[in-house]
Image (cartoon, rainbow, N blue to C red; front, side, top):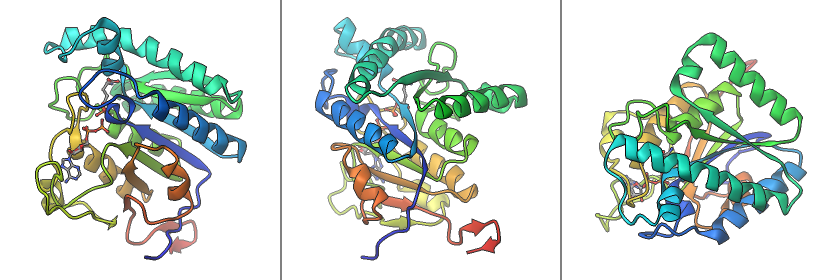
Length: 276
Ligand SMILES: Nc1ncnc2c1ncn2[C@@H]1O[C@H](COP(=O)(O)OP(=O)(O)O)[C@@H](O)[C@H]1O
Ligand SMILES: N[C@@H](CCC(=O)OP(=O)(O)O)C(=O)O
């Protein structure tokens, strides 16, 4: 299979809860987090600009509070998320510190990106952080924004938020790490004949129909929100790779253009000079 052209300087990496916690427990996958911090720090050392969009607040909060079942009400989920978010950031801070890197917490809501002034403020904050060589770590501000928590996501989930961030800062690439090797013709957890799509260039209703819900009790949006994110990326002439985050070193393979995961790229990438 041909190598992909994924030369990227400004990269948004989204990691889902399912990659940060061991399946069916609310215990942290410390190895995955350590490797993620290593790879992202190494990319910074290579001169790349990196933004991490990390889920996991609810999952980490559940672990901290000793809950085995995800709370059902929105206020309870919000409370658990706010316990977990501090803990999550603390873990990242420690891990990134091992490599001499500073991180910043950015909790965003849908409306900050809808209002032009808020959008500009967020953009400016990103620019300054990147100038300061800091790695911004983004999550939805769960105590304010509840769209994603009721699992009837209209807009506000970290999959789509990562696409919004990629759009806002004009990223060269969005890498979405999940607990699955990519986007399949149907949910591989339930269909053994599901086939992996290597490249997707457009998203229509038939493609959306092959997307199912979340894989673990911690995940939120499942494949549907990832496809919605991909749709936004494609309509902005940007690129996204969906891959398995079990070993975050896969980011090196992706950036080397190796055919791992599913690449979402527009058929014709527009350049400043015209269509490539
Ligand atoms: N067509 C599909 N291709 C791949 N995965 C799918 C598909 N439909 C549903 N899924 C499910 O989506 C899950 C990933 O979404 P989710 O659990 O929300 O993860 P994350 O926490 O990484 O956001 C996979 O584990 C898989 O079970
Ligand atoms: N903001 C919440 C849920 C975010 C979310 O989209 O979760 P996921 O499907 O694991 O990416 C959290 O941090 O737990």
